[in-house]
Amino acid sequence: MSRPELPSIENQGDERTLLVSFLDYYRADLLDRAWAMSTEQLQISLAPSSLTLGNLLTHMAWVEQHWFRGRFDGEELADPWPMLDWSPGNDPEMAIAATLSADQVLDLYNFSIDDSRRRIDAARSLDQLSVESREDEEPWNLRWILLHMIEEYARHCGHADLIRESIDGDKAR
Image (cartoon, rainbow, N blue to C red; front, side):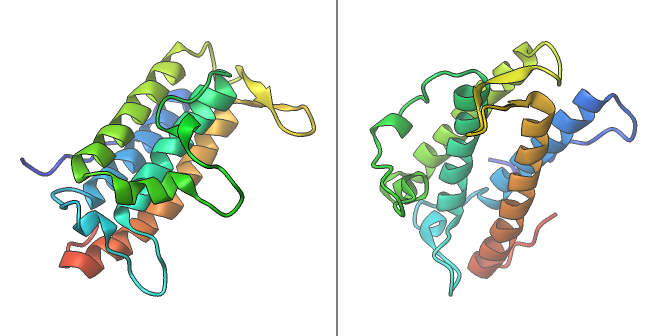
């Protein structure tokens, strides 16, 4: 399998196109960090952290569903999320990576992204409000969620760069 291409981002475009393009770039960048990794390699951490590439991929699969499927559209999250133990301090969205093969981790990640893309595409505008609200009863608009997702991915792609380079020397592109 050849290395996946990172999508290009237009220099000029409307707000929605640019936000989705940056989000798609970071989604692809995180996937690139796991490219050609075995199940065992996806479970290697870089001391002193316990984070692994597998943890980051399953965490972001959950984050995608949490924000777009759950909060934005108000739907129950797809399996495996509802059946996990969400007791405080558990981080089940990360721990599940150790129970999955590399193919299963990637399938879960790709399923979540595809599901999120459909929801973003179906939204009327960036001003569309989420079904779920904050504790103060104020919903988020799609614009805020897209910006938050870009921030979340940017942080975790940095983690993934360090982990991947420590495993096999492959540097971020």
